[in-house]
Length: 259
Image (tube, rainbow, N blue to C red; front, side, top):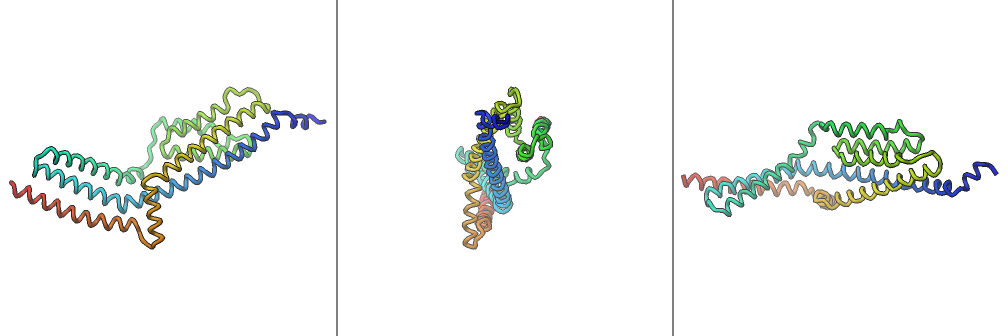
């Protein structure tokens, strides 16, 4: 019996073969979940951009008008309740404005801090596909590098640090190159991949439960009825803005009449 056949019959080698198959399977699942989540992020970001351009700016205008009305009413009524309403209305207007015009800030050139650049370089030195030892590792490193690039573009220091820590944990304090050492490395890789899948699933559920995702579902339902929900919302807001402008002019005239 050859040494190779004897090796294949050792418990470590049998376990190693099974763990390699499990690692390949869990990595495929991870790649699928990452792709699905990336598509969901992009889809919601595109819809959110349209929402803020078409509807969000109108909410900002309406809330500003309501705050101006409330502030003028403080002059008219000079009461604590009027001042409280004015403060709350102005705070709401500031929040709405910040949300509506955040897209413009996001579109500005990304200028990451030096610490993020250093962390990204440290990650790239370890998981770049050029450093892979075989085809399977090169494929995995390609996926990791794509994840690192996405985290860097989002300024996600936590995700980059996790990639670095995972690499260190998998490769540190494991002596030798035999089946037992490789089995331990693969076991850690499986555990990390399963954790990442759970994190991606949690993020997906959070995104789907968000207000913008629910609004997107409503817009899709309206589209199936040949309606444009955002256009309808914008038209309704335009009417409310016209009414608010009328009320603003009215209270302004009242203040001037008292002088």
